[in-house]
Image (cartoon, rainbow, N blue to C red; front, side, top):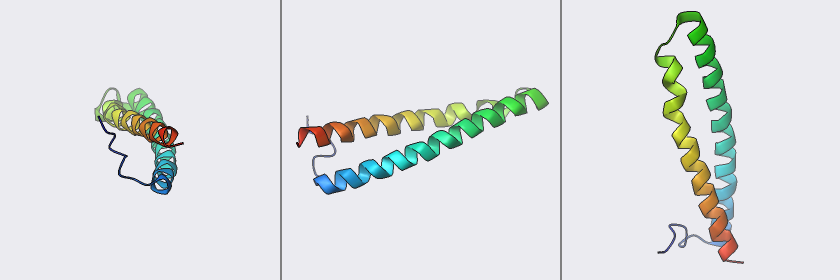
Length: 79
């Protein structure tokens, strides 16, 4: 089965990988801040919507990391 990245050129893949890395770092930082806010909010007000908010955004980070892995594999296959 062909990868979804086979239509990209090598330079496009490199640019996409750099962009994905930056976005993953930003999303990780935001997710950690959300977790900290959820912890403090839970101590202050008890269990609320903010307690579970990071759980909704965590899968997006894992999908992004999985996509980065696929891009790296595609770049390795082209060497």
